[in-house]
Length: 214
Image (tube, rainbow, N blue to C red; front, top):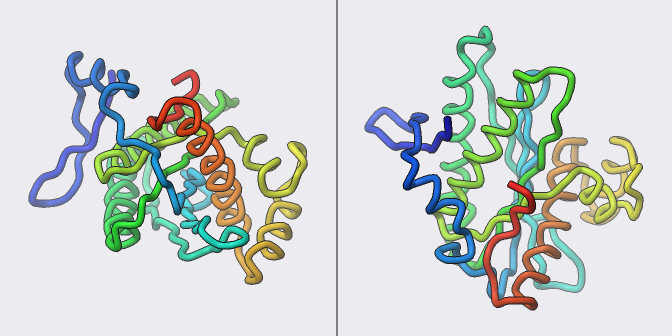
């Protein structure tokens, strides 16, 4: 089953995609927003139970990346049966923030965390679904999308694919000249590598999305 975000008077809800809609989504090269002249990138570090989904908006027009804004979505505690409601809540919060972040019309990309299959299949499915939802929201607002693996984000921010949480946080604080928490640091690393992916894609074929093996 493939899901998408639908809008109602009461907010965002999850609905099932039709086969035709899924095929259109797969054809990213045909109708994806171009990555031309990307100046900013939003990086999204996905969170579920123990920490919040965190976003970092980076600007790449200066001599070095600048951290313009951050956002962390609030989650409502609940049992496993409430995970659809929590997905909708996080997606709605992120969509509202994106509306403000993109309001000035500066060309902006969206990079989100690639999810590995871990010991907890339920959490993996929830995170993967959340990543797809947020990517879809960004895409609907005109952002080209890139999917970034943790090792790529670590290398982009610290130069080491084996960097730990503390090293990531310290590197982000040095780069941006301000204190950030570990999840915002992860989001910044995702944005850094996402910008490079989108720039390389534009140089290669004029734009499009970079979704890897989705």
